[in-house]
Image 1 (cartoon, rainbow, N blue to C red):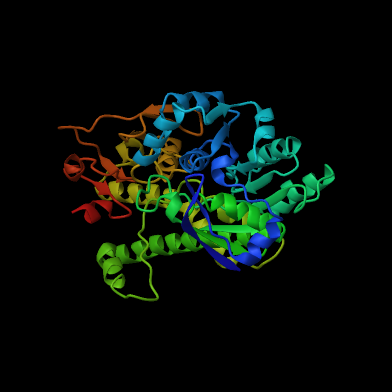
Image 2 (image 1 turned 45 degrees about the vertical axis):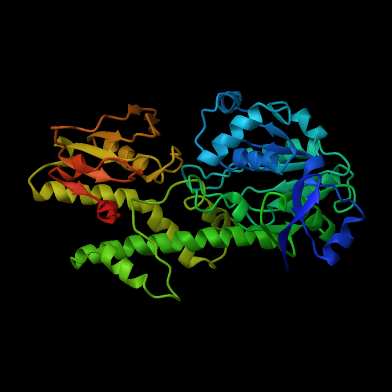
Length: 446
Protein backbone atom coordinates (compact mmCIF):
# COMPACT_ATOMS: atom_id res chain seq x y z
CA UNK A 1 0.00 0.00 0.00
CA UNK A 2 1.11 3.52 -0.73
CA UNK A 3 0.14 6.89 0.69
CA UNK A 4 0.44 9.79 -1.72
CA UNK A 5 0.35 13.35 -0.44
CA UNK A 6 -0.52 16.22 -2.73
CA UNK A 7 2.22 18.80 -3.30
CA UNK A 8 1.85 22.29 -4.65
CA UNK A 9 3.00 22.43 -8.28
CA UNK A 10 2.47 24.76 -11.19
CA UNK A 11 1.09 22.43 -13.87
CA UNK A 12 -1.37 24.58 -15.87
CA UNK A 13 -2.05 26.61 -12.74
CA UNK A 14 -3.65 23.72 -10.82
CA UNK A 15 -2.50 21.47 -8.03
CA UNK A 16 -1.63 17.91 -9.02
CA UNK A 17 -0.55 14.77 -7.24
CA UNK A 18 3.16 14.22 -6.71
CA UNK A 19 3.15 10.46 -7.24
CA UNK A 20 5.93 8.20 -6.04
CA UNK A 21 8.25 6.99 -8.80
CA UNK A 22 7.11 3.35 -8.76
CA UNK A 23 3.52 4.41 -9.38
CA UNK A 24 4.37 6.98 -12.03
CA UNK A 25 6.31 4.38 -13.96
CA UNK A 26 3.12 2.39 -14.53
CA UNK A 27 1.39 5.26 -16.31
CA UNK A 28 3.36 4.69 -19.52
CA UNK A 29 4.09 8.34 -19.99
CA UNK A 30 0.53 9.65 -19.63
CA UNK A 31 0.88 12.86 -17.60
CA UNK A 32 -2.50 14.50 -18.18
CA UNK A 33 -3.38 16.96 -15.43
CA UNK A 34 -6.87 17.68 -14.18
CA UNK A 35 -6.85 21.08 -15.83
CA UNK A 36 -6.64 19.50 -19.27
CA UNK A 37 -9.23 16.81 -18.58
CA UNK A 38 -12.93 16.31 -19.12
CA UNK A 39 -14.39 14.67 -16.03
CA UNK A 40 -17.82 13.02 -16.17
CA UNK A 41 -19.84 12.40 -13.02
CA UNK A 42 -22.64 9.83 -13.26
CA UNK A 43 -25.30 10.65 -10.67
CA UNK A 44 -25.63 14.14 -9.20
CA UNK A 45 -26.97 13.42 -5.73
CA UNK A 46 -25.42 14.04 -2.33
CA UNK A 47 -22.12 12.51 -3.48
CA UNK A 48 -22.04 13.21 -7.20
CA UNK A 49 -22.76 16.94 -7.07
CA UNK A 50 -20.00 17.77 -4.53
CA UNK A 51 -17.62 15.57 -6.54
CA UNK A 52 -18.49 17.42 -9.75
CA UNK A 53 -18.00 20.78 -8.04
CA UNK A 54 -14.65 19.69 -6.60
CA UNK A 55 -13.50 18.64 -10.06
CA UNK A 56 -14.66 21.96 -11.46
CA UNK A 57 -12.81 23.86 -8.72
CA UNK A 58 -9.66 21.89 -9.60
CA UNK A 59 -9.86 23.15 -13.18
CA UNK A 60 -11.48 20.27 -15.06
CA UNK A 61 -14.19 20.47 -17.65
CA UNK A 62 -17.09 18.65 -15.99
CA UNK A 63 -19.99 16.71 -17.46
CA UNK A 64 -22.71 16.08 -14.89
CA UNK A 65 -24.94 13.19 -16.00
CA UNK A 66 -28.21 12.37 -14.26
CA UNK A 67 -31.24 10.60 -15.70
CA UNK A 68 -33.55 12.62 -13.44
CA UNK A 69 -34.50 15.81 -15.29
CA UNK A 70 -36.09 17.18 -12.12
CA UNK A 71 -32.78 16.87 -10.31
CA UNK A 72 -30.98 18.66 -13.15
CA UNK A 73 -33.55 21.46 -12.97
CA UNK A 74 -33.00 21.78 -9.21
CA UNK A 75 -29.24 22.07 -9.75
CA UNK A 76 -29.65 24.69 -12.48
CA UNK A 77 -31.96 26.65 -10.17
CA UNK A 78 -29.50 26.20 -7.28
CA UNK A 79 -32.22 24.56 -5.18
CA UNK A 80 -29.96 21.93 -3.63
CA UNK A 81 -29.10 20.88 -0.11
CA UNK A 82 -25.37 21.58 0.12
CA UNK A 83 -22.80 23.19 2.38
CA UNK A 84 -22.17 26.93 1.77
CA UNK A 85 -18.85 26.37 0.00
CA UNK A 86 -20.50 24.03 -2.52
CA UNK A 87 -23.35 26.47 -3.09
CA UNK A 88 -20.74 29.12 -3.96
CA UNK A 89 -18.97 26.68 -6.27
CA UNK A 90 -22.25 25.80 -7.95
CA UNK A 91 -23.08 29.44 -8.61
CA UNK A 92 -19.69 29.94 -10.26
CA UNK A 93 -19.85 26.69 -12.20
CA UNK A 94 -23.27 27.47 -13.68
CA UNK A 95 -21.83 30.65 -15.17
CA UNK A 96 -19.01 28.74 -16.82
CA UNK A 97 -18.75 26.83 -20.07
CA UNK A 98 -16.67 24.21 -18.23
CA UNK A 99 -19.81 22.66 -16.67
CA UNK A 100 -22.33 20.69 -18.71
CA UNK A 101 -25.46 19.20 -17.13
CA UNK A 102 -27.18 16.53 -19.19
CA UNK A 103 -29.31 13.40 -19.15
CA UNK A 104 -27.78 12.11 -22.41
CA UNK A 105 -25.51 9.08 -21.76
CA UNK A 106 -23.68 9.67 -25.04
CA UNK A 107 -21.99 12.65 -23.38
CA UNK A 108 -19.76 10.17 -21.52
CA UNK A 109 -17.84 9.47 -24.71
CA UNK A 110 -16.23 12.91 -24.48
CA UNK A 111 -14.88 12.25 -20.98
CA UNK A 112 -11.32 11.33 -20.09
CA UNK A 113 -12.53 9.98 -16.74
CA UNK A 114 -15.95 8.76 -15.59
CA UNK A 115 -16.79 8.73 -11.88
CA UNK A 116 -19.87 6.72 -10.89
CA UNK A 117 -21.69 8.19 -7.87
CA UNK A 118 -25.15 6.62 -7.81
CA UNK A 119 -27.00 5.47 -4.68
CA UNK A 120 -27.02 1.87 -3.45
CA UNK A 121 -30.01 1.65 -1.10
CA UNK A 122 -31.81 -1.33 0.40
CA UNK A 123 -35.46 -2.24 -0.13
CA UNK A 124 -38.18 -2.59 2.51
CA UNK A 125 -36.78 -6.01 3.41
CA UNK A 126 -33.21 -4.69 3.87
CA UNK A 127 -32.15 -6.45 0.67
CA UNK A 128 -29.52 -4.59 -1.39
CA UNK A 129 -30.98 -2.72 -4.35
CA UNK A 130 -28.37 -2.41 -7.09
CA UNK A 131 -30.77 -1.19 -9.78
CA UNK A 132 -29.23 2.26 -10.11
CA UNK A 133 -25.65 0.98 -9.97
CA UNK A 134 -26.26 -1.72 -12.55
CA UNK A 135 -27.80 0.84 -14.90
CA UNK A 136 -25.00 3.37 -14.36
CA UNK A 137 -22.27 0.79 -14.96
CA UNK A 138 -23.98 -0.57 -18.09
CA UNK A 139 -24.17 2.99 -19.40
CA UNK A 140 -20.51 3.71 -18.59
CA UNK A 141 -19.36 0.47 -20.21
CA UNK A 142 -21.50 1.01 -23.31
CA UNK A 143 -19.96 4.45 -23.87
CA UNK A 144 -16.41 3.64 -22.77
CA UNK A 145 -13.59 4.47 -25.14
CA UNK A 146 -9.89 3.70 -25.28
CA UNK A 147 -7.84 5.65 -22.76
CA UNK A 148 -10.73 6.34 -20.38
CA UNK A 149 -10.50 5.96 -16.61
CA UNK A 150 -13.62 4.59 -14.90
CA UNK A 151 -13.87 5.06 -11.15
CA UNK A 152 -16.67 3.62 -9.04
CA UNK A 153 -17.46 5.33 -5.72
CA UNK A 154 -20.80 3.72 -4.77
CA UNK A 155 -20.82 1.35 -1.81
CA UNK A 156 -21.63 -2.24 -2.66
CA UNK A 157 -20.63 -5.87 -2.09
CA UNK A 158 -17.04 -7.03 -2.42
CA UNK A 159 -16.37 -7.79 -6.07
CA UNK A 160 -18.76 -5.22 -7.51
CA UNK A 161 -16.07 -3.36 -9.47
CA UNK A 162 -14.91 -6.58 -11.09
CA UNK A 163 -18.45 -7.77 -11.83
CA UNK A 164 -19.95 -4.53 -13.12
CA UNK A 165 -16.98 -2.81 -14.79
CA UNK A 166 -13.94 -5.03 -15.33
CA UNK A 167 -15.73 -8.08 -16.73
CA UNK A 168 -18.16 -6.15 -19.00
CA UNK A 169 -15.33 -4.01 -20.37
CA UNK A 170 -13.37 -7.17 -21.16
CA UNK A 171 -16.46 -8.57 -22.87
CA UNK A 172 -16.47 -5.47 -25.07
CA UNK A 173 -12.92 -6.27 -26.14
CA UNK A 174 -11.00 -3.87 -23.88
CA UNK A 175 -7.89 -4.91 -21.98
CA UNK A 176 -8.28 -3.33 -18.56
CA UNK A 177 -5.03 -1.71 -17.50
CA UNK A 178 -3.97 -1.11 -21.10
CA UNK A 179 -6.95 0.13 -23.16
CA UNK A 180 -9.11 1.39 -20.30
CA UNK A 181 -8.45 1.85 -16.60
CA UNK A 182 -10.74 0.85 -13.73
CA UNK A 183 -10.59 1.61 -10.01
CA UNK A 184 -12.75 1.70 -6.93
CA UNK A 185 -12.52 4.69 -4.59
CA UNK A 186 -15.38 4.82 -2.08
CA UNK A 187 -17.08 8.10 -1.31
CA UNK A 188 -16.48 9.47 2.18
CA UNK A 189 -18.77 12.49 2.11
CA UNK A 190 -20.67 13.37 5.25
CA UNK A 191 -23.63 15.53 4.10
CA UNK A 192 -23.82 18.84 5.92
CA UNK A 193 -20.42 18.42 7.60
CA UNK A 194 -18.34 21.57 7.11
CA UNK A 195 -15.59 20.40 9.46
CA UNK A 196 -14.39 17.73 7.04
CA UNK A 197 -14.85 18.90 3.43
CA UNK A 198 -14.24 16.16 0.89
CA UNK A 199 -10.87 17.61 -0.14
CA UNK A 200 -9.45 17.01 3.36
CA UNK A 201 -10.65 13.41 3.71
CA UNK A 202 -8.15 10.81 2.40
CA UNK A 203 -9.29 8.89 -0.67
CA UNK A 204 -8.68 5.16 -0.71
CA UNK A 205 -8.05 3.87 -4.22
CA UNK A 206 -7.92 0.27 -5.36
CA UNK A 207 -7.09 -0.25 -9.03
CA UNK A 208 -7.77 -3.32 -11.14
CA UNK A 209 -4.05 -3.11 -12.09
CA UNK A 210 -1.17 -0.89 -10.91
CA UNK A 211 -1.66 1.27 -13.99
CA UNK A 212 -5.35 1.64 -13.16
CA UNK A 213 -4.49 2.67 -9.60
CA UNK A 214 -1.98 5.24 -10.83
CA UNK A 215 -4.40 6.82 -13.29
CA UNK A 216 -7.18 7.02 -10.73
CA UNK A 217 -4.80 8.38 -8.10
CA UNK A 218 -3.66 11.16 -10.40
CA UNK A 219 -7.27 12.20 -11.08
CA UNK A 220 -8.56 11.97 -7.51
CA UNK A 221 -5.36 13.49 -6.15
CA UNK A 222 -6.42 16.77 -7.72
CA UNK A 223 -9.47 16.94 -5.46
CA UNK A 224 -8.16 15.21 -2.32
CA UNK A 225 -5.15 16.08 -0.21
CA UNK A 226 -4.20 12.45 0.42
CA UNK A 227 -4.53 9.30 -1.67
CA UNK A 228 -4.15 5.93 0.01
CA UNK A 229 -3.52 3.12 -2.48
CA UNK A 230 -4.56 -0.44 -1.71
CA UNK A 231 -3.76 -3.54 -3.72
CA UNK A 232 -7.14 -4.29 -5.31
CA UNK A 233 -10.68 -2.90 -5.66
CA UNK A 234 -11.84 -5.71 -3.37
CA UNK A 235 -9.74 -4.33 -0.53
CA UNK A 236 -11.21 -0.86 -0.97
CA UNK A 237 -14.75 -2.28 -1.18
CA UNK A 238 -14.38 -4.23 2.07
CA UNK A 239 -12.71 -1.24 3.72
CA UNK A 240 -15.75 0.91 2.94
CA UNK A 241 -18.09 -1.66 4.42
CA UNK A 242 -15.86 -2.03 7.47
CA UNK A 243 -15.77 1.66 8.32
CA UNK A 244 -19.55 2.00 8.05
CA UNK A 245 -20.21 -1.23 9.94
CA UNK A 246 -17.89 0.04 12.68
CA UNK A 247 -20.23 2.99 13.09
CA UNK A 248 -23.36 0.85 12.89
CA UNK A 249 -22.20 -1.49 15.64
CA UNK A 250 -21.25 1.40 17.91
CA UNK A 251 -24.53 3.23 17.25
CA UNK A 252 -26.41 0.09 18.25
CA UNK A 253 -24.26 -0.16 21.40
CA UNK A 254 -24.84 3.50 22.26
CA UNK A 255 -28.61 3.03 21.94
CA UNK A 256 -28.44 -0.04 24.15
CA UNK A 257 -26.45 1.81 26.80
CA UNK A 258 -28.99 4.65 26.73
CA UNK A 259 -31.69 2.10 27.58
CA UNK A 260 -29.51 0.63 30.32
CA UNK A 261 -28.87 4.09 31.76
CA UNK A 262 -32.60 4.86 31.74
CA UNK A 263 -33.34 1.64 33.62
CA UNK A 264 -30.72 2.60 36.21
CA UNK A 265 -31.90 6.24 36.30
CA UNK A 266 -28.49 7.53 35.19
CA UNK A 267 -28.04 10.32 32.58
CA UNK A 268 -26.39 8.74 29.53
CA UNK A 269 -24.88 12.06 28.37
CA UNK A 270 -22.92 12.33 31.60
CA UNK A 271 -21.70 8.75 31.20
CA UNK A 272 -20.63 9.37 27.59
CA UNK A 273 -18.85 12.62 28.41
CA UNK A 274 -16.99 10.95 31.26
CA UNK A 275 -15.88 8.07 29.05
CA UNK A 276 -14.74 10.58 26.43
CA UNK A 277 -12.06 11.88 28.76
CA UNK A 278 -10.03 8.73 28.06
CA UNK A 279 -7.53 9.68 25.34
CA UNK A 280 -7.21 6.16 23.93
CA UNK A 281 -9.34 3.07 23.39
CA UNK A 282 -12.68 4.89 23.35
CA UNK A 283 -14.63 6.89 20.79
CA UNK A 284 -17.87 8.62 21.80
CA UNK A 285 -21.10 7.57 20.11
CA UNK A 286 -24.40 9.12 21.11
CA UNK A 287 -27.76 7.36 21.22
CA UNK A 288 -30.71 8.51 19.18
CA UNK A 289 -33.95 7.51 17.54
CA UNK A 290 -32.24 5.21 15.06
CA UNK A 291 -29.82 5.51 12.16
CA UNK A 292 -30.68 7.07 8.82
CA UNK A 293 -29.03 8.25 5.64
CA UNK A 294 -27.33 6.57 2.75
CA UNK A 295 -24.69 4.62 4.70
CA UNK A 296 -25.33 3.17 8.16
CA UNK A 297 -28.79 1.62 7.65
CA UNK A 298 -27.92 0.34 4.15
CA UNK A 299 -24.27 -0.48 3.57
CA UNK A 300 -23.85 -3.33 6.12
CA UNK A 301 -26.60 -5.26 4.34
CA UNK A 302 -24.40 -5.48 1.24
CA UNK A 303 -21.94 -7.54 3.27
CA UNK A 304 -24.65 -9.51 5.09
CA UNK A 305 -26.31 -10.30 1.78
CA UNK A 306 -23.04 -11.56 0.35
CA UNK A 307 -22.51 -13.75 3.43
CA UNK A 308 -26.13 -14.90 3.73
CA UNK A 309 -25.26 -18.59 3.56
CA UNK A 310 -22.43 -18.32 6.11
CA UNK A 311 -22.52 -17.78 9.85
CA UNK A 312 -19.58 -15.37 9.87
CA UNK A 313 -21.08 -12.01 10.84
CA UNK A 314 -23.21 -12.48 13.99
CA UNK A 315 -22.21 -9.14 15.56
CA UNK A 316 -23.07 -7.23 12.40
CA UNK A 317 -26.39 -9.07 12.10
CA UNK A 318 -27.38 -8.31 15.68
CA UNK A 319 -26.35 -4.65 15.37
CA UNK A 320 -28.37 -4.13 12.18
CA UNK A 321 -31.41 -5.84 13.69
CA UNK A 322 -31.14 -3.53 16.70
CA UNK A 323 -30.86 -0.44 14.50
CA UNK A 324 -33.90 -1.50 12.46
CA UNK A 325 -35.90 -2.13 15.65
CA UNK A 326 -35.04 1.18 17.31
CA UNK A 327 -37.95 3.32 15.96
CA UNK A 328 -40.50 0.70 17.04
CA UNK A 329 -38.90 0.54 20.48
CA UNK A 330 -39.30 4.31 20.75
CA UNK A 331 -42.99 4.10 19.88
CA UNK A 332 -43.37 1.35 22.49
CA UNK A 333 -41.70 3.64 25.02
CA UNK A 334 -44.06 6.45 24.01
CA UNK A 335 -47.00 4.17 24.67
CA UNK A 336 -45.58 3.33 28.12
CA UNK A 337 -45.15 7.02 28.99
CA UNK A 338 -48.72 7.84 28.03
CA UNK A 339 -50.13 4.78 29.78
CA UNK A 340 -48.37 5.82 33.00
CA UNK A 341 -50.56 8.94 32.97
CA UNK A 342 -53.70 7.07 32.01
CA UNK A 343 -53.63 7.98 28.32
CA UNK A 344 -54.03 5.55 25.46
CA UNK A 345 -51.78 5.86 22.44
CA UNK A 346 -54.72 6.01 20.03
CA UNK A 347 -56.26 8.89 21.98
CA UNK A 348 -53.05 10.96 22.08
CA UNK A 349 -51.82 13.79 19.89
CA UNK A 350 -48.13 13.19 19.19
CA UNK A 351 -45.57 15.48 17.59
CA UNK A 352 -42.28 14.22 16.14
CA UNK A 353 -39.49 16.81 16.09
CA UNK A 354 -37.24 16.38 13.04
CA UNK A 355 -37.62 14.00 10.11
CA UNK A 356 -34.27 14.66 8.41
CA UNK A 357 -31.98 11.78 9.24
CA UNK A 358 -29.38 14.06 10.87
CA UNK A 359 -29.12 17.69 12.02
CA UNK A 360 -28.52 20.47 9.53
CA UNK A 361 -29.61 18.78 6.29
CA UNK A 362 -32.78 18.13 4.30
CA UNK A 363 -32.02 14.47 3.55
CA UNK A 364 -34.75 12.09 4.77
CA UNK A 365 -33.40 8.82 3.39
CA UNK A 366 -33.96 5.95 5.85
CA UNK A 367 -34.98 8.57 8.42
CA UNK A 368 -35.91 7.12 11.82
CA UNK A 369 -38.22 10.10 12.31
CA UNK A 370 -40.27 9.07 9.28
CA UNK A 371 -40.30 5.46 10.48
CA UNK A 372 -41.58 6.62 13.88
CA UNK A 373 -44.35 8.56 12.12
CA UNK A 374 -45.21 5.49 10.03
CA UNK A 375 -45.51 3.26 13.09
CA UNK A 376 -47.57 5.83 14.96
CA UNK A 377 -49.99 6.11 12.04
CA UNK A 378 -50.02 2.32 11.74
CA UNK A 379 -51.25 2.22 15.34
CA UNK A 380 -53.96 4.78 14.69
CA UNK A 381 -52.28 7.75 16.36
CA UNK A 382 -52.87 11.37 15.39
CA UNK A 383 -49.22 12.16 14.72
CA UNK A 384 -47.69 15.30 13.24
CA UNK A 385 -44.14 16.48 12.69
CA UNK A 386 -42.13 19.69 12.70
CA UNK A 387 -38.95 20.17 10.71
CA UNK A 388 -37.86 23.59 9.40
CA UNK A 389 -35.74 22.01 6.67
CA UNK A 390 -38.29 19.45 5.43
CA UNK A 391 -41.59 21.14 4.54
CA UNK A 392 -43.34 17.91 3.57
CA UNK A 393 -42.82 14.15 3.58
CA UNK A 394 -44.53 11.15 2.06
CA UNK A 395 -44.92 8.12 4.30
CA UNK A 396 -44.42 4.60 2.89
CA UNK A 397 -48.19 4.16 2.65
CA UNK A 398 -48.41 7.22 0.37
CA UNK A 399 -49.81 9.60 2.98
CA UNK A 400 -48.35 13.09 2.62
CA UNK A 401 -47.70 15.22 5.70
CA UNK A 402 -46.63 18.83 6.04
CA UNK A 403 -44.49 20.29 8.78
CA UNK A 404 -46.48 22.17 11.42
CA UNK A 405 -45.50 25.44 13.05
CA UNK A 406 -44.00 25.52 16.56
CA UNK A 407 -46.96 25.58 18.97
CA UNK A 408 -47.11 28.72 21.07
CA UNK A 409 -49.66 27.86 23.76
CA UNK A 410 -50.82 24.52 22.38
CA UNK A 411 -49.71 21.35 24.15
CA UNK A 412 -49.31 17.95 22.58
CA UNK A 413 -49.83 14.86 24.68
CA UNK A 414 -46.32 13.75 23.77
CA UNK A 415 -43.38 15.18 21.86
CA UNK A 416 -40.78 12.76 20.45
CA UNK A 417 -37.41 14.34 19.69
CA UNK A 418 -35.89 12.58 16.68
CA UNK A 419 -33.63 15.25 15.07
CA UNK A 420 -32.80 18.71 16.39
CA UNK A 421 -31.41 21.06 13.77
CA UNK A 422 -28.84 23.73 14.68
CA UNK A 423 -30.39 26.98 15.89
CA UNK A 424 -33.82 25.37 16.08
CA UNK A 425 -35.73 26.98 18.99
CA UNK A 426 -36.48 24.45 21.72
CA UNK A 427 -38.08 26.53 24.47
CA UNK A 428 -41.54 25.44 23.33
CA UNK A 429 -40.42 21.79 23.38
CA UNK A 430 -39.31 22.06 26.99
CA UNK A 431 -42.76 23.41 27.94
CA UNK A 432 -44.55 20.32 26.67
CA UNK A 433 -46.04 18.03 29.35
CA UNK A 434 -44.31 14.86 28.10
CA UNK A 435 -41.06 14.68 26.13
CA UNK A 436 -39.44 11.51 24.81
CA UNK A 437 -35.86 12.40 23.89
CA UNK A 438 -34.10 9.05 23.14
CA UNK A 439 -30.76 10.68 22.39
CA UNK A 440 -30.97 13.28 25.16
CA UNK A 441 -30.41 15.91 22.48
CA UNK A 442 -32.06 18.60 24.57
CA UNK A 443 -29.58 17.88 27.33
CA UNK A 444 -26.65 18.24 24.96
CA UNK A 445 -27.93 21.68 23.94
CA UNK A 446 -28.23 22.96 27.50
